[in-house]
Length: 139
Image 1 (cartoon, helix red, strand yellow):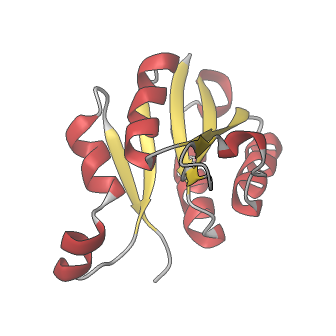
Image 2 (spheres, rainbow, N blue to C red):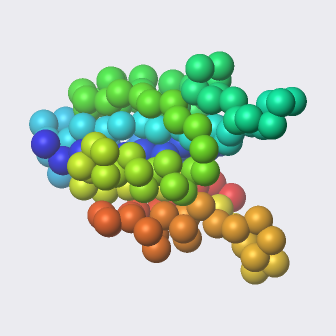
């Protein structure tokens, strides 16, 4: 089986563009399994510790839509909710799941925006041990 991690960010159109790209892979319904992953940022508690948001956060609707889409296409898919730094968690997931590929949705950002806010896509590309595919969703 070829394992694909599909990273979600809550943006419905972008996630569905990613899902459709994966569904277009040759033999997708017979040879691909997809793990749809949403990473929520950790929250600091009033006491200074971190709260594991995985226990409280629901999967975004975009992830649920992707799962339904894969089911309709006959592609095996499951969802995982994680918390922490999105890039670090996605790279960790590829290692834990022995994933063959990561599929991310890209978006346009100014050079200043990338410098100030960072880029999950860039960090994943630089750190992942497997190929990373970026899909440009709707603008």
